[in-house]
Length: 377
Image (cartoon, rainbow, N blue to C red; front, side, top):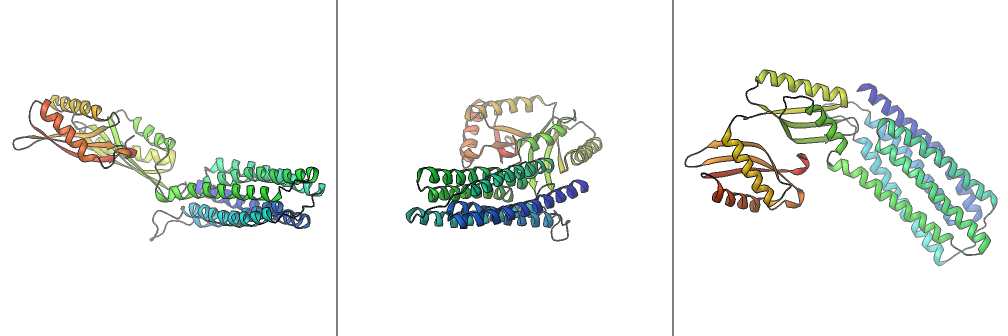
């Protein structure tokens, strides 16, 4: 785990340093050409490179801060700094895009001739080549260390190639046709920057808000649990993301109540260790002993499942128990509730109780806990 963290930090620093140097160079080249040519679209593209250089600075700082070890006040570490750095980059991109949109609109309503030369074209072509290489560089590193921040930087570099191509096209069109589309192209670049900034903001805000675990991560954890034949079922898988390489998870596993509890405890300890060693996930498993030799329980569970299927086929149950009471028998269980059914818990319970009162062999009362389906897929 330490080796992975060290490699991640080193890769982030390398990507940040390369991004700063290349984007600063491109900014200087394009700014000079845009100023001499009087082209707002080239200047807009230059400022886009400046924002990319600033983004690389923030990325570099984010990886550095994310490297800090856990302390008394932050026992889960500081890896979320990487997400915060991505959010800061998004805000910078949005600000640059807004400013460029304003200047481009001014150019549309007050157009000025653009002096386009083949030197300008050469500079823009070189820029596109450098950005293509930078996209490949960041994509390769991002894949290696599984960094959304670097993958976003790679996509941004790839998109810059498209934006610079648009600037080049506007210069060629104006030179050979006389059509003044420079302001419109500048506005298109600004809109493109704003779109990229919004997308990056969504990608960085989502994990900070506590997004659901992705299908691949869920399967990694569940495959580990399924590998133990004495596990009869599982539910309530919750994953907490404290930054890249800092994931914690909890899950309930069901085992036959007749199994030796000490053996079950040892099996669970083994599953937790294997999950950390294989996937770097700190897993905590809650042991649920289940009854497997009670005909009444099996029959009532089948009846409840059939009634819930009639209400909504997505409704599934777990932790089903039967507890005799005074004058009635309690059916205690949990239901995984889809997000779009939130608020209808009382209705679902009432319909289920009505069906049981009409069809059950004796008086049953339900005690139901509704869990989010996101934890029980």
